[in-house]
Length: 280
Length: 164
Image (cartoon, rainbow over the protein chains, first blue to last red):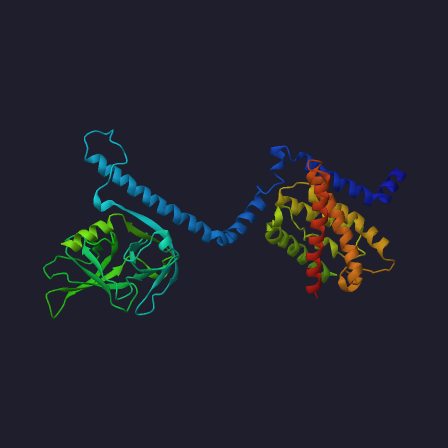
């Protein structure tokens, strides 16, 4: 017995070494056994929470690429939605359901969206501009409307091969034909140059019945915006002292400080409509 | 002594966290994976008993295995390092370092490279051999061992040089 204890004491390092290595080997060999391996993997309680916490931080690094994907997906869905609407409109006009699905759509629905990212933006100048990372080669041309998921952003002012400059609502040169949703009276919307959240709606006659909180949206009279895209809501109004019109403050739907992805609206029948209007 | 226990605890966590959070995310060329957590085992005091070194190696290796999903591989490599480190130091130098912590200053630059290089090579060889287990061609495993050893050594030297 004494000899045995002496033996253990003498070789205690070796014993410990063998014990630890055997433990490690047992873990390694058992790794293929799913149920036992679960304890020694990143799915156990402590390491699981640890990596959840790590992911909460590192998640932010991939945020911009995820955003990009989502925005692309959004535009694709919007385009698909448009196409489906066209098909519904086309099918409604016919008695038979078996009509070919690629029938031409109503003239006012012939548009599609081009996705773009805002790469330069300002809200604090009197004449604000916005630059997009898409240009002529992506199909953008001057006088196309620009919207995002909140509402109207502005109108394309000029394009180069790869970039486009937008006149946002926050530029007094930009006048947008807009209407009050309930009474259908229309006027034009101009920025007052003070607060980037508000713009002025002009030329609404005094007999119009309007109320605070009412939605202001596009008229669809031009080839820039389709009808009914939100611009903002009426925040205050008063009769102007000098003429027969209201002075209406509109709170803009689009938060220009946070605009990052936009959709440029491309009318397919634009040229035809404009040529026809010119000859009149 | 209390002070040094605190110091080595801090090194333990720093090395482990740096490994898991930063260096494990490096996937340069698809097979570069430096194991800088080894710096913890490298700077343990020279006179520390073999049993302590093996136990600390076991704990460190287990932590790494838990985060890499490689049960046993890092544990066995670290225990091996803990068991053989004193012998390796004795065979390299015939000086008594008492309880000094191995570093560029106590060993000298060239001697530290010899010492760390040996330990890293032993550790990486164990890990990559256990990992590949004759699944991969031998020369590829050899390439990975050598390449990763050099990178780990480089990173640990960088850390050594900025350390006071």
